[in-house]
Image 1: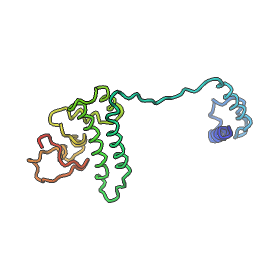
Image 2: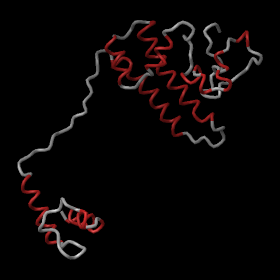
Image 3: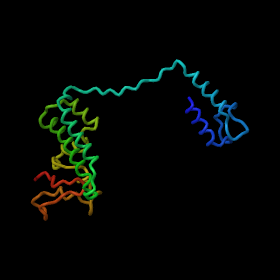
Image 4: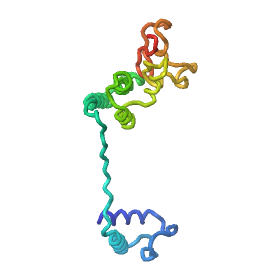
Length: 198
């Protein structure tokens, strides 16, 4: 109660009284500050009006679909790796290399869910959609994997021309037999080659 009164008093001291039309008439005085007694009566009056109204309880319970217990340990393990990669100090790395482990783990999670649903047919469509909605996999990356020529795409940035010099795709998208250099690393995600023909 005292902290509320103090906050109100500070709020009213900061605001100029000339432009305030929402304060009750009994609170406005000729002095630049309001009296604490007037604030206490106003707070008590506002609290008396709300007696009997219960606040709404927010529940954030997620209904897990059938089969979740089968994939949960693997996803939790990948989440733990992701947390380690995010908290890892990257002092000795280049600026672009700091995000490579995070891209790699995000790719692993998306590939795991993609393989379970599209290749092995081990999870239901409901569980697959649940994983997409909860952010366990990248929906846009999986959509690209379904298209011919993008089955092994490492990340979406590697195929966007606006993120590269000369408005082309990343060097990791070039097939191995067409490369001048045999060992390459993508600047965005550290990929060493994700062309479909490799």
